[in-house]
Length: 357
Ligand code: SF4
Ligand code: SF4
Image: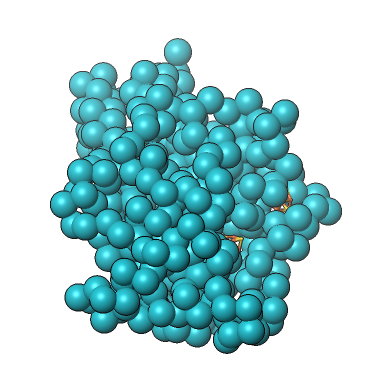
């Protein structure tokens, strides 16, 4: 068995459903680096300043890691079942990728162990892991490594397994045989562009972070200007409409199996939207332990739930919203008052919802 196959076998043994290897070129240029530059120049990153700050490393990994020769890209699938009822259950207002266990912790553990196993097997002398937070163009490297292609919705898609997957990387100092890049299968389909409720996909493969719901309710953890609140379309955390409509994720088509560890149920999944609004900090700590949503923070979850309740006019939350008008936190009070206003038939919320529907 050649070294490349042995590396991918070890990746599978360490819990990754998919893996592929990309060569890091001599000049260190990352795939799709020019597209990133154009995206930043056009201001499509919106308030996500951190993307701009570490863009130089994203575009050229060798600037920071001159020893890098290969990128091992790995992926595992999360549970993509429909869960809960909108207007009643918090889980129905949370994007699928944010529902499970915190993959950062799980992937970091697995990638550290995988790096050690590769070193012990003599397949590399040095390995450095990345999970989401580093300056790595994860989807672009994964596309080059053959794990999937970047669809018009900007997500990585596998032709048989769809896009409900999470990504990680190991940077290696060994030059292993690379996999062929995945080819584009979107064809003439435009379902994701048509379905995005905020127009955040203005062109195929172009995400306008200014308009994407995820920017406002996950990346910025709920601390957003009032003008954005009516634009969350019922999402308390994240949004995955552009993935849910993709034919490659259709239940009859995708054969992906959810990773058992990622899909372990968490206590917060039983919360109603009203209970999430009323959550105290100790209950948040208990319910969200080891959850991907923990990073959103206690206040971020409450703000997200308040916004979702206002968006969908959730009558089941009215009592919790009224209680929040006396909350110690001014942001919670303001968001609750706004959510209650959305429920008034002739109020400001009605006009805003007509405008955005
Ligand atoms: S995540 Fe939601 S808001 Fe963002 S591009 Fe996809 S459908 Fe649009
Ligand atoms: S919905 Fe269609 S266009 Fe969008 S990513 Fe999926 S296949 Fe591509």
